[in-house]
Image 1 (cartoon, rainbow, N blue to C red):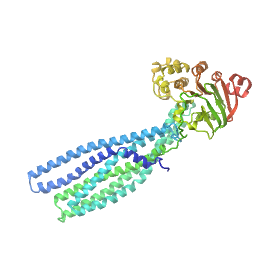
Image 2: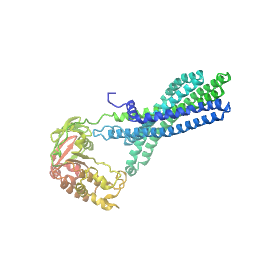
Image 3: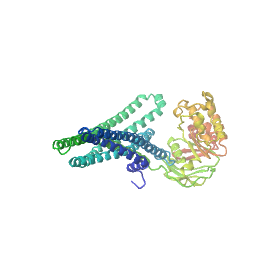
Length: 565
């Protein structure tokens, strides 16, 4: 992968580096906690040898105080370390979510390629959380390794053979645990992919629920989601079985290892090489070792899942941009002269077209694909395969995409509304211009919609505006586009669900509210086309005719059939 392109390892590395101070602090506290825990059986062994065996009350009291201090320190360190590590994980996940959001919202686009919105949401939530958890588990892993080292040193002081047994046995156990985690990593990645796809399909079906009901296609939709959900369930069960097998295998290995330590300690005690207190300490340390080993098992499993999720996040961050970003910025305000020179993309075939500054131009495309490709080019969601598009003489490819969209607004036919009030939806792009919002509400007849709602313009709309009818949603979406007051506005079929009387009123108001600014209507609506200065007809992906609406109606039978159908 080219230099600078995110990979799974880079995503993990950035998540960890961003939380380095927290991880270090939590690791130090965790090491102190585990060290105190490891010393507990050692102190108990000392109490047996120096106090219980000798009957010394003073020694017993002194060592009990030491024991109480150890418990106090380990309890405080554990609580503080847990709080810091959880904070590190949450901050790391939040940072990843912000990176993903920035990439998805990048004006150059591309991150959404071949991904359903629900899949992107799953990556930004579940995968980000799993990668963030890596920042949490590092402190746990460091603490567990410290506990093993402290236990080994303590056992060396009790008995060299016991200490060497731990020191020599830990590396193979850790290596085996890593090898055992490989299948879990692969299956976790598959699980997340299937879960993300299921989320995407669910969101897709919910967004089109009304259409599905209208077509009577509920059973087909249910069957589609059932299949996707079952695939996701099967992948989740495979991952769960893999994790259970991983944890069981590691637990069995560590159990055998601890049993060997206990047996060796018992043999040394029977041989007289160590005291009864030493034997108690050795057995206590052997039992204590189960905790660090289980912690390392958990760390290994979380790390495996984190690596799989990091690769999925890296794929989104590394997705190439749909268009390249230029450096130039349009004039403020832009004159608004658009010129297409030999533009070819998809259904478009060498389109030559001038859209004069301040003009109101209608574009009629018999092929919906040609209209869609034209909108993609004008919005610069895609660049033409051939030819150029210019704004005031400057090629769009040389303009900064974000700055371009502040000059040119393409309002697609299927624009969604936000789950907010009607007025908030309309002024989303109005830059606080109250006058522009009021004009837009009147021009789009959205003020009539507000009058029918219980709280007027302050009525809260449901998700995607589903609490409104189709025509009402179109009027609010049109008001939002008009309120943005861009130098160039391209509207695609803004009134298909509006009744004819309202459509005629919108047409006349639209011309007035956009006077002096470039407006393009990609539509077959005769009411809208009648108020344009000029109509351009696209057929077979190229310009076939141009003229005034009335002249084309009288002279062109194909045009007449298209717009009056």
